[in-house]
Length: 259
Image (cartoon, rainbow, N blue to C red; front, side, top):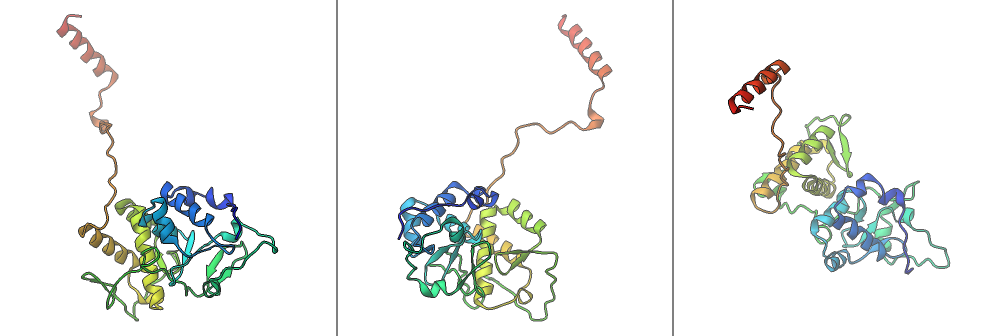
């Protein structure tokens, strides 16, 4: 396995990557540095603990599709072939042949799961939803074959989750993007495991919000608070003084203090 690794600026200079917390970016670089010649890492949890990264950082990399995870616990760097090219005489094929067989290479060189058969579980980035008879706490995911939903106006997140962009923005503003992305990953995993299509799961946005509210109530996650501005609210137009009124007031004040 090579000792040196490279990174494509098209990936690490993208807004999607830069917008992530520095801890998540650091975790990505460490995973990529320790990947084999096909981009696979068999100990992502160990690396995460070693550098002091949090579970949210690992979840974010999965949710943002910078890494792909498998049931075995192995992960792969999605854009590995865009980052690195090895000469055939130096290349050593990965030992994770089963996981590699679940991938296809797109025209741009990035990996993609074939039929979404590689699904992250709680032993990797803890994005699996432990439901138990399709339930989370007291809230269940409703499944109805007769449910009719149009996805033409909605944006696809990961492989199975559809949301209006305005709804995604609203959820992020209300609960924080990291919390929302973690639940998108969980819902995506839930649907993939049960081979359900979008038409079989009602209102993805509502389900995501339900999970977040439940976790907040249980003290599992915190909602980031927006900083309040110290600036006073603007004076309504009808209450503002005219220049003549201002001059008259100044004259009266000068008289009062005998200036």
